[in-house]
Length: 505
Image (tube, rainbow, N blue to C red; front, side, top):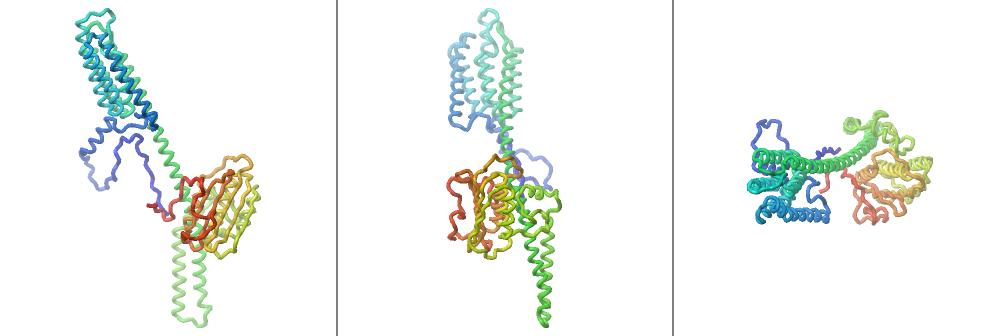
């Protein structure tokens, strides 16, 4: 039985470095100094090089990315041109000085798309330099009260808000808080510690607007991370459900094979015990050999029951017994461990039960039975049973055709149904019944193909080889039973793994 590895979801924004193999138990507990590579990785995370999906370019669509870049570039151009003129008129700067100050802010806005932390440092440094230059101008020029805005003018304020918003989208929450607190402290030092003459203070309003921009960015980032984690968890849950369904079906197959093998081993033991009495004057060597055969059969039977006996249904609360309550079953095919194994001879009883449930089922048989192994007949019965159960659940009132073709190399099954004649009610179940069919067929070297019909019906075809070996490539089979998907069909989203549990290369 293959083991199932638990998948641990990765970080939503890719900030955490991939973890290596766990340290052995005997490893020393001393904390090792961070390597230069780890330090550089941590620095890149703080610089915002591992953005969340909500970060720029903000979309997987090319047109949306181009729109984001265009809006950012036009905003930066407006800051550079319009803001330079405002600084020149407000503080009496020369045109070159005014436009240079706003040019730094425009560069910071564009740089924040890729390197938000350096962009924030550039924007804050440019704003402080502009405020210090304006402080000297405010002392030299005469203004009427209330005076110009200082230390944050409108263009500088808008540019720094945009930088903080882009930073909050790309950097961790702690980094965003650190940038916001540093901006507030620098503003308090410049406005409250240095001050100027005849101006209107804007520090409090600026810090409040900066906080709003940071909160909006952090909220968008958190929302995106939550959605990414939800998608990852949903994917993992679907995969685990498919694996669990697959393992449950394998457990059921193991129980049924156990019953088959146990029957044959018991027959071998009894025949070996009776054989000496059927021969007149058997030799001692013959008696020893037959006794050895019987003992080996009993030991093998004991080991088989010890290993697989735990998989038997032990009561009505068994999960498989609950699942079986929603499946179509013929008399004697329930979860009782001592029930006889079904075979092709019991298909008629299965179809009669299906007709009693309200389906119009037509059975056709071609060829003559050729004495198949019990495992092949059991799997054929289970495939037809599961297909009819699916019709009962998902296509009530449909017409069903069950075709059994006895091929020289195996059994061909074809189960088709028309569209449902009435609304389909919600039904319980895991929704992965095809997994069990395909797992049974793969175990025997066969295959199962399930496709939707153009008229809204459904079709399940299966081929089970007689001797349990894969179907030869050149084997002449009817077109419906070839190992290929018809045009326009959709493959099963959770194909079963090989019976050994090994992944295909």
